[in-house]
Length: 324
Image 1: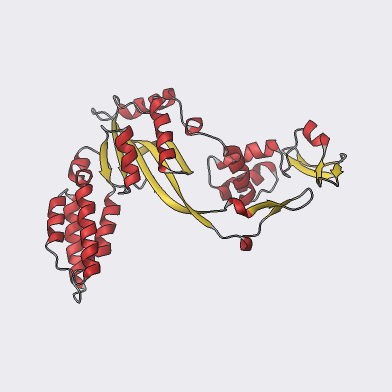
Image 2: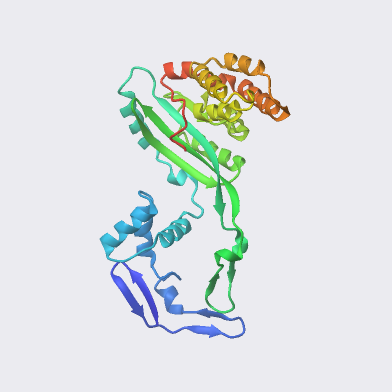
């Protein structure tokens, strides 16, 4: 006797089961005939849940699901179902068509006389994952889910992109793609988007905005060499604040005074002035000297991406908040 849930309600199903003592595996032929899954919730419920989780957070999706169907669903189950459906999905499977993008472009282009800005924001973040070693089977028919205490979490980097149009005071979303994968795999996904003609550089002013991670700019230079490149203003300011307290030793007020002045110079695109100020500093110790040297190299490496005055005049954003 099996109990399953469908959109018509909970059903108790009586069907024969066969079990092999030698291989310790079981089967129920009627399950295959009725296309039942090994989950309690069946494909029609799973499909409805995925449609909700695509639009709203898991908790909200579960609340809406129970309100519409009368059947409860936990956020954990919704996540598991969505992950199973998303297995093997590529970036072009979730991307809008060229016609859909062209329609959005037409709406945005109807405003200012100049070409609209298409922003490509790229970022990465470390996330905790469950390693393959945490999965296993118990002898018999039932799966054995490893308990949290039996395995150590594995931190991996999720890399993602977001493509959107800047329309005066709002943004018009085009595409988001985040995966736990390498920078090469992310580059391959971006190449698919470019090859499919979803990014028409002749119709827009393409701009790439990101932090200072080398893997990001390596991919950008290979795929979009003519794009306007902007280093995220807030990330750069964060580097300034980290070293601000080092050079002045026992003068707690001076780091903040210097940092505020440096941030203002960055805002107006005066990167050489910030570098000059860093070069004139007298570090209190070797660690401070090393930190200052790294920041100078960082600013010199990204100097052309820090022309925030030019960016603001052109209508380009200087912050990567849309991908954060």
